[in-house]
Length: 248
Image (tube, rainbow, N blue to C red; front, side, top):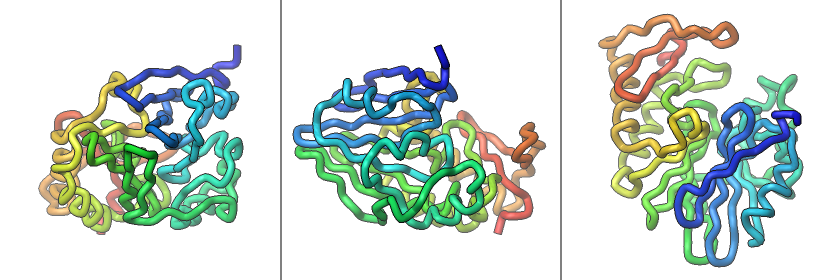
């Protein structure tokens, strides 16, 4: 069977599942009393909609954390998905890869609430990895679904369209003010960290690395990636990859 059409399902906790595709992209299904959300659509080519419908029969809406191709494949299977219109720049940068029309998406912005009945998720804009990256905060359950906004171990801030580290730090500091509202971070490629959520230590280490690079107190080593070269620094589970020409 074509591996690109296969999906793997793991139940993470009550009302929360992760679907992984052949390239370890994570898609989350959040279900509550009245409605369900699908967060991201990976880069597989299978019947993702049919797969999700076997998990939940609740009315379903799709939210995309950002426009990169490994999070938006099969998005066209779903009607009127949500994604920040600030991702138009990313779509134009990767138009040879991305088959997306921003006009087909409903815009989302900071503070939007998705009420699933007895569970609410708040949209927090976190520009950095891309201009329109968002995370979803479930305060009651102390969960943050983060896409690639703070990475999955490796945090890519060197790809085309990523903001300078100085601007990214502003986003991180905004989220830091809310960190007493979440304990578990479900990232965009959870299979790469053993299908376990990241924790606050990881988040603190991301901030530490960005601050130290900006202060000139950490110097990166060469990151081994032929397509997107950069420099990297690391602390604990966090590894920050950055472009030395886009620090400020």
